[in-house]
Length: 196
Image 1: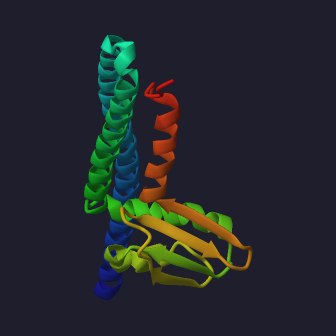
Image 2 (image 1 turned 45 degrees about the horizontal axis):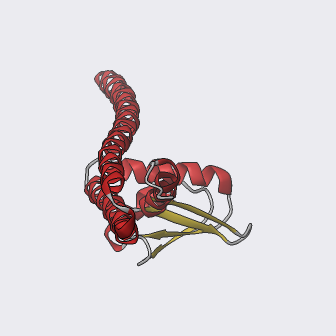
C-alpha cells in the first residue's frame, strides 16, 4: 500500500516535471525567436543609419568636386562606398560570430534543422556544419526522421547548416553566411549608395 502511494507520488512529480520542462522549452523558443528578431532589426537599423550618414557624406563630398577632378572624385567615392559597405558587413559578421558562440545558438540550429526536416520527410540527408558546431550534431540529427549523416564543412564560416537531400536532389542552405550574403545584395540595391 505504501509502495502504491510512493508510485503515485513519483508519477505526479514526474508529470509535473515534464509539464514544467515543456513550458520552459516553449518559453525559451519564444524568447530566442523574439531575441533573434530584435537583434536582426537592431543590426539592420544600425546599418541603415551608418549607411545613411556615410551616403550623405559621400554626396556632400561629391557636390564639392570640381569637373576637372571629377574622375578622381568618382574614384574616391567608389572607394568610400566599398569601405562603408565592408565596414557594415564586417561588423555584422562579427555579431553573427558572437551569436554563434552564444547560448541561444543551439536552439537556432535545432529550429533551422526542424524547418528543413519538414521538407525532407523521411529521406536520408547529409548535414554540413562548421567544425565548431559538430558537438551540436545529435540535437540536429534528432530533427530528421530519415537517416541524417553529419559532415564537417570548411565553407561555413559564421554558422548554420546546409542539408543535402540526395534522393530529391535538393540542397537547403540555412547558414548565417548565406543570410549575410543575401543582405549584402539587398543593401547594394536599396542603401542609396549607388553612384551614377
